[in-house]
Amino acid sequence: MILVTGAGGHLGSATLAALRARGVPATGGSRSPGPGMRRLDFDRPAGLDLTGVSTLVLVSAGYAEDDLVVARHAAALAAAVRDGVRHVVYTSLTTAGDHLGFALAHRATERLVRESGLSWTILRNGLYAELFGGLLTWSGDGLESAFGDGALAAVARADLAEVAALVAADPAAHRGRVHDLVGPPVTAGRVADRLGVPHRTVGLGEYRRRLLAETPGLLPFQPPMLVSIATGVRHGFLDGADPALTDLLGRPARDPLAVAAATASAARPAASAARPAASAARPAAGLRPQR
Image: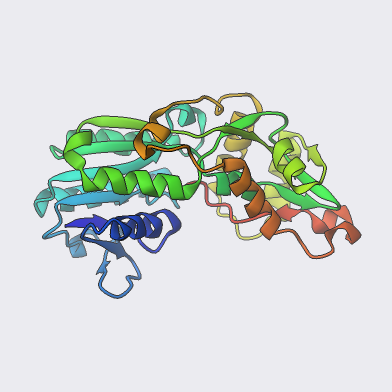
């Protein structure tokens, strides 16, 4: 049986749905499990139960400081070894993301995966097109970002879920493989053009100030993460291509521009053009970097 962790999150739930759509026996694990799922709380290692699981899709539990994230993943891997899991598929971060503020936890987890003794596959996921669209802010009659003219090789989350399902359904074919999964490059300007609005660039200092002073609900580790994404895109570190995604899918990738534009459009404030810029400026969607 295949078990997908983080099944209450976007990527985990989409991966589980993709497996079931293929008729592959699979279940999910979550802190708040749905019907037929297992309760898995990585912060309570003694209660982890992976008995009967042959392939574990370990979706990154990345919404925390690095030490906590790595400890969670270590607990999951220890339970996998103890309970006889044969193969682990870990959803990591694109190779180009080594410059990002949340890369360390992914690379440390990759090392744990390799050292676990389990058969493994690492999926180095590009940043979501949904995230890119969500990091644009509405202000007055247009969009603002700190991305400048830089591009991101963004990926629709659904494509990453489909690849995870494909790999988990046939793990032997991907044993010991690292797949770098990035999509066609998109820019903030092109998203704005798709929506028929202007795009204005703000400096990284102003972006950081807004995150710290004007974005309620952010945890202390999040502003540095988000600024690292902005500067990585702005300075051309995250726009590289790789054929692995389309090779595995056997078809073209979903259009990340359309996905990013839809995400930004869905969060456009009503009558935003009539509002003062300062009051209308807000993120277009949630700010969790990658899960």
